[in-house]
Length: 485
Image (cartoon, helix red, strand yellow):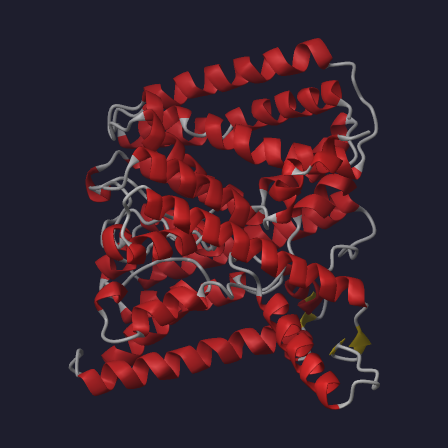
């Protein structure tokens, strides 16, 4: 293990990350909200710490292997999540404890969207902007951005990319060079963010709200500048725009890359993709169930309003964004639990959504179907296909392994929370919301996480990291084999 090289890279990343404090300081100056000092302090502390790590190891430039790649990815998220807490620690408004500051930072960077802050409408603009900026950077994975920059610093990026990019198949690249892949993904990400911001602005948001909400929408993060979230605007048009861009962001970005050609947009690329079709089908089925149940209950006074709330909340929760137009936890019967369970599916692999990913659900269903066929015809040979491609058994084994590890982490976190005197509904939904990077839950965490204990918050921070790093990337560090030469 090349520890000095890893420390050098971590120091460089901390130095680069410190730059993210400066836009928020400029926002503080622009709006004269008095919050700029905290960001300047955080900038100097983070760049100083990065320099301390980098300078003694500046000549260490060994080649990275896969093992070092996994360790750097985990260090990246944990160290930068910690550095990201500095502005919250230094700020007087909001006046957060150390635990709350770390919780808010990790929630933003992992795009979970759970918050401990009450009174968002009264916060300084700079703090609001910073929360959304963290989500925007975390949405695509700051590592993917870093691999476009690190080759310029003499660091190969392929090992980091394979450890970071989600999905069961990690051997494919959009373009031959990893740096070009990262740049292509970020170009698409930036263009979608710009389009979303403009759509919000022309739909009635002011410029600040439009930019902030476009950050959290494309990142599928769910942070808002208002306590009432998207419901603050009371606009069906804004609801539709938000849901539309959430669905776009929940699609595999490799599909977007393939669809955007020099001749325009090739829609057939989407229609041929099995994961995309299942994603849309899940949204339609869930919307139909919610609409029928809400309409029959007579909660809203018109079918149009019922459909508006049902469609938006389904897309928001099932893609793991967590925006709200209505308190879905107060909906009747089984709907709140149904929506929480839908977040386990999440978005497509290679998207900014959380959860286990749609492709894994497809493969689990296909594998279950194959086992049923084998019961009837034990000697028959059945292959699992996605489209016309037969998948090797190692991929199916990896999916089953992931599902088992995901379930294990979920159960362990939930049991620990219940051991801390948290009721079953709150423990279940808080764990699901953190592991799936969803945000809002049920019970005591329906609105925010300020009322739970500090110990529970640290458990949920770990769950956020497990979810964001797709379990295995973090879990592998706890195996003795990883540390053996």
